[in-house]
Image 1 (cartoon, rainbow over the protein chains, first blue to last red):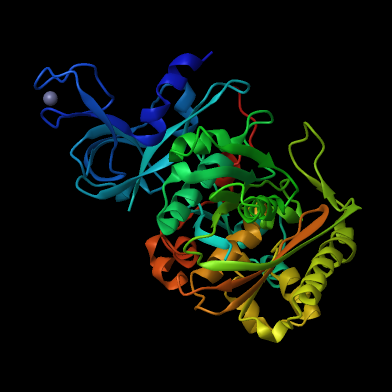
Image 2 (image 1 turned 90 degrees about the vertical axis):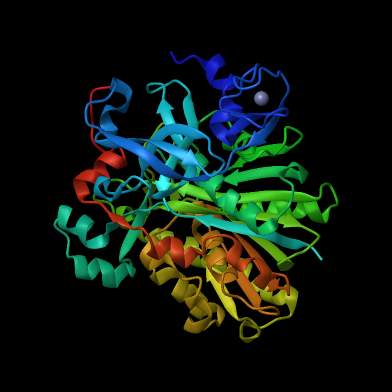
Length: 130
Length: 348
Ligand SMILES: [Zn+2]
């Protein structure tokens, strides 16, 4: 059984790309943190990250964890969003040969995981080529 | 003035051609394409469902409406493929888009007309003065049984409409609904694929209800078909909307822009709403638009809309339906399609 409480707690980041921006030095923490790693300030404002960015690097997964085995082969990339924040996510809806470092992507809302046949559906972000 | 202040559509990138399905079942591709006027249809990705399609369509509607999502007072999603039997699709959508939590949310169902229902109620809330904005969405990821005629048409996609009073891009002038108990198409609780009553789906169902709502709308508005620039009807295949349009007195030219079914398939609750979005992509200020949906069981919702001076300002703020239809297509073979649509039995 999926940890429902944890999924629920992470909804602002998973659904809306909410991050914490340090009001002292401008550092953006995603996921949000309590203390700024740069200036040690504890004051953050909530911002929504850009939904556009580019591929920094990627890899093709051919043998995956059990719950993703029906999607293989699939691509997982590190995406640098326009505001400089990096996140790791699947790159979907493309022939894997089209994926290249530096290509522009857009963040989309997708189903990330199904907890078996009867459990909850987990949604979040993935990337598609623009 | 009350009407649409923002609209948006979403279609998956995957496609399957009618001939690919026909070859699988030993049918003649040309007779299918000629008979149903269907070339290909959209197929949802393995990670797409009614919720994700609704979110993407609504994002595009918000881009055009340019409003604070917090001001949306109601969210209704009409679909016959809500991912949960119990848990509203709209609850996920409001959290994904930063709407609410002070918002009224519900899932609607009425076969293929659940989307127009959502639009109808959203519009009525604003008209009643209950709220500033309301969002109505029609989206589906429908399934036809393998080898059934529905397999050529059942596709995936949706459209979202934000209703409001300020900066209206298409004023809603008249509405009308028409409903009777007609068992033309159904799916019992727990069944995976729907059933339909073959030829019974045409005359007593589709045609009777669209004509019923359509004629009443014309009477109410004292307008005649020639007054309209565009008309769109529910599109279960390519043929039916053309025939029903003709019966009501509309020409092929009036139907052309919204008639996207040959390349999209039947997106069920998203069908006529996505056709309307395709019309709004091109309409000019002053153009009158006639729309009638159809849902089996059976009923129709009709709208008469008029494009305003605001429309051209927002048309390019989000992807247009024709671009979603024509760009980034990925064709699937039947095996890939069967896997995507979970038509293959596997060990869990
Ligand atoms: Zn700092």
